[in-house]
Amino acid sequence: MRLSNRNKAPGYNFINTLLIMILVGGIVSFFLEEYKFNILGSESYLLIIIPLIMLVSFHLMGRQIFEYDSDGEALNFKNRNIIPFLDKPLSDEFPKYKLIKYEIVNLLFIKRLYVTISSKNSGSTMLKYEISYLTTKEVNDLKFSLNKVVKANNEKNVKDR
Image (cartoon, rainbow, N blue to C red; front, side, top):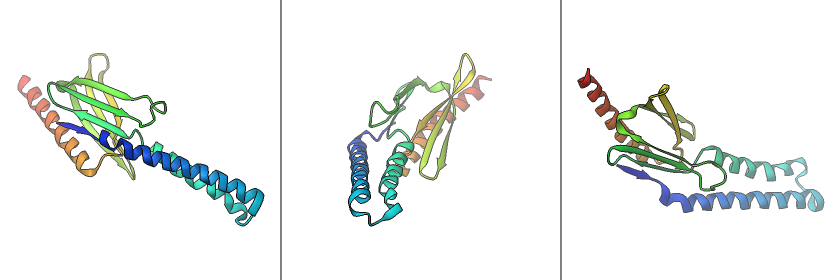
């Protein structure tokens, strides 16, 4: 199964650009307010604070682009930001039999996927991916696919014992 929200990247770029333009407009309005009009008083700081909070929250929700591929014998996870220099992109590929479990954590607007895989060195390793920008249907499809892999691995482990 393949899952990707890469086609939404232009929309995320538009939102990011719009938020930056609103912030710049807020900064210009703030200076005009402070030195020319002086209508709002101390509330003029909101012209900078509100757009800044919106921009920071957009980026704190995590990497916008998530790609998953479970075709074949390996699982591929890719997670990257629309602004390449902001975050290091994540890219992991490992055999399906190494998947032990997964967990999706949902905190208000922030969603994270934690994948635990078996490792030779430490026994198990946890990988973290940001899936905040996936729709509910995409998250359900991801859960279905990962459940299938975990179930197949558990059945194989029971058979081997």
